[in-house]
Image (tube, rainbow, N blue to C red; front, side, top):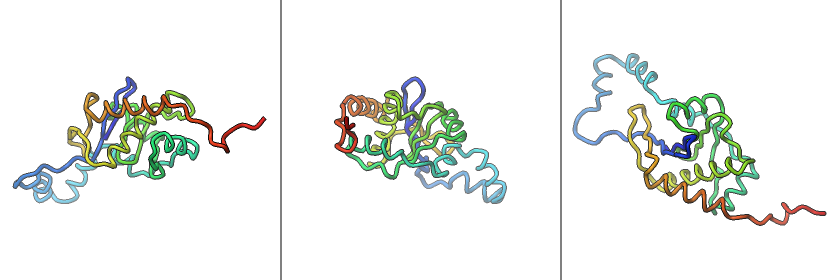
Length: 183
């Protein structure tokens, strides 16, 4: 998962990878000893709110915003889902982020998704860079133990997202013929 906190940091959140090795996963041992119901209850308590939010669906980008960002990046963002509800806000706070990205899901704290402002579009461009990065394969991160991995603000993916957002947002787009005003 990439997260973007309110101080211009972004991190990656992704499902945590199971540890490699010949030993039985501790969860399986616990399940064998305590039973399925007990383990399921513990997992519900330990599950990151991030997973619940990204599994909730979200909404597609507004068509105008999607078209603008697709033109800037040269990428298709039709699969991107934005999460801005109370659960999204709470999950972003839980991971200390103003915004974060998991796959094609971009989650924002309350009032930070504002594609009508320059700052809001820049933040969205940063997070869309993380969407592109995660489409290309695994990204760096530290397992939190709650089912997600979180990136570090200084890792190469964060630096690339910051630089890419700066670059794509510095380009003035020419209005398409159907976007031009007629006088």
